[in-house]
Length: 581
Ligand code: ADP
Image (cartoon, rainbow, N blue to C red; front, top):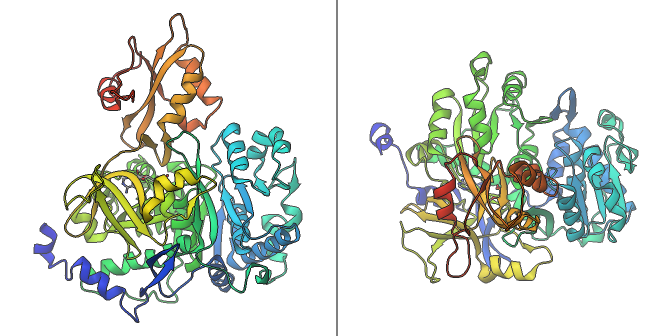
């Protein structure tokens, strides 16, 4: 490790840095608390519920919070809209534990509706805005949402189905028609400034205090059974990301033998360009939550375009960009990159998919002033469980770092014993930020969370310092950009096509997106369908990102093992590099 000999780094071991930073009296002090039957480490201080976060939001007053094209929302005005909407939810009969589904692109109304729901004890249920009609209806039905709030495009997609959802009492639309306008309750975004500066409705009805370990969010993730599963996250799970982010920065300073300097009061406001959707835990828990607690600026885009993103970094003096590796690649690779003043960038942070070591080198080369940082997490860990940054990332560019002080992990062998350091096996994790359960699905909950450890389905090895290297996935899934595709869902659908006998989905390597879905299909005797037809068939039922970019036709039965399971490795070997049939 050349860095340590050249500069004396590291000044302190990872274990000692953790011990120092989490000791009594430190801002990052940890405390053992009973969480769902286990004694788990929590942050002893700092925000623990949405109410704590919103209290800070209100204090940020006139600072700019959200920018979307020419709309600008201050923290104070955002808080007014949240308080107003929270009161309206109570008036409408929304009770603690009720699900409030939010389905829209990244608009300022997204955090308003989500924060208002969580602040009154309801469970915010953000649905994937790229989902098809069928997938959205499934999410609304499975969650049993009492209230659903859409943007016009999403409402149009499901309008004809809403009457058939027995639990759904209230449907609202932001910026459109066809349901009760959200603006009737809180006015248009430009009018939030003139709303009264009201307190949040009292929480008496929720019990004397809001329990940090009670349910706050329901984020859907695809499942190995083919149907999406809702992972229930607690207040503690998403609010923990606030101190976790500061801890990771402090850890980098301490490893250098320095103390993290306090940010001067007159320092320019930090700003994050949000290029990933708010409806995943990366957007909501890892980015939005710490950002709004800290009073930073959030710059939204109607849709991601790398050229526009570069212009926005210059215009809004963005300090943090990234989200997922695919976004970071597009920024560093863009032909116009040098035309912009990108000197404000301090951090290029990404996770949620394999992070190629080459990407960290590119970021460093292109923006020496912007530290690359890679995180590992899942919907089921409510975002950042581990993070690698600064010199540690330089020294171990293929690792996603050690877990945060709130998390523990181990690598398991197939026989259920723990693997020694360095051996590859399934990564199991445990901690207070892990999801409470899968909504309404005790069998899946037991399978994944049973025994107090979350079985991640990722294959990893650990080194002697506790850093993890994710080497593969045991679960049959691929990640296109940042979106997960569970193969079984697409395979089952293809098999419903009358001409298809068997279908398999594999990942086709893609430099910036990581992988793209490719299907291998064997047609029935006498069946006829071409690539375009099968792609259109998938597109008619599933989100666009799940549609195979290529369909290969196999002339013989697909390879299977003795249990009848498809041998994906063999299929990848044969098809992943070849041209379409
Ligand atoms: P997220 O919203 O964080 O992407 P998902 O539940 O959609 O959460 O995806 C989680 C999966 O993404 C992990 O189980 C793992 O397979 C993959 N993943 C996340 N972070 C990394 C990383 N740093 N390196 C490799 N794979 C990762």
